[in-house]
Every structure is written in structure tokens, then in C-alpha cells.
Length: 226
Image (cartoon, rainbow, N blue to C red; front, side):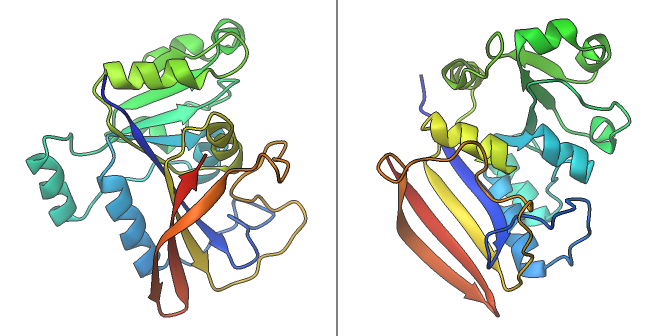
């Protein structure tokens, strides 16, 4: 069974926030950051996105650059990677534009959510619902399913709860962090890794692999040291 490489691709402010206190607040788009994100996503067979991110943004990220689309075709990949939404509750509105996008959709969830959600039957018509455990997400099962279906490269796009879950499962191989030259502040503004946190002695450490600078933005590439 082929090993799956998982890369986290996130952008955060200089004070470590991935969005403002109100995640729906618009952010000025940045050409360099978007091009970087599009390139990283173009390498993926599947992207993992938290349900909160899909609810806040409404859509998944799609590749539009003709050169990147051509490169995917040469590599034998589908035009767009599979988008896999991770949701423990299945609280996903079918009115989200995501469910009309021309992408293959998976949803990782739990058996409890599948049994209790009023959306299950409708969601099964627009996405492949995959249970990873009774009440918690069992990432070993998730990665086995992905490997069985030919997934070799995963890009995780957050939010913080999803990233924390992957860190806890020791599934993240490397990180691309974009540092925006702005301060959002806010005690309740989300950060790249949420969850309960890690004590210093057991916290995963990172090794810096590469740095890039475009104007006042930094692009930092780290390898995870478990």
C-alpha cells in the first residue's frame, strides 16, 4: 500500500491568526498567496477541509491556472482534486455553493452523525459519506481508505480543529505557512492549530526546509519531526 504524503497549507497573520474574530469578514486577496495556494493544491489527489471552513467560505478551492491543469493531466490526475470535508456532526447546509461545484466530494464523519443527522439521505446524493469511527474520527481508517482508492498526496487546508486532529494523529509530513504582514488580534480569533493543545515536552517540532519572500509576505516550509 502506497504511503500518503500530507501537507498542511495555511496562511496566518503575523500574530498567528488564520482569520479575524468574525471568520466571515472579507480579506483582501493577495496574488502571490493565491498563486502559491493554487500550486500546492494542484499537486494533491485530495484536499481535506474542516466543516467550519466550508461553512464560512461556502466553496472549495478550485484550480483555474491552465498550466497547472495541464500538468495534472500529464500526471494522470483528475482536473480537480477530491474535496473531503471533515465533519463530526454532518451539520452542512445543502444550500452551500460547494454542493454545486464540479468536484468530487467526500465527507469524513462518524457513525453517530450518520444515524442522527436529518441531512444524511440528502447528503448521500451529492457526496460520498465515509464513516471513520463511532463518535471520533479514526485517522488510521481514513488513511487506509484513501490509500485503497489510490490517494498519494493530501493537502490539508484547515481550519484549526482539523489541523489539530491531524497533528494528534501524527499524519502531517510537512507544512507551508504563509505569513501575512498584518495584525488581526482578538482573543477568540482562530489560529492554525486549535484543539486542547500540546504540552511542550510532547509537542511536535518542525525543521525549517525553505523560506521565500514576496514583498512583505513570507512563505515558510517546514518538515514535521515526530
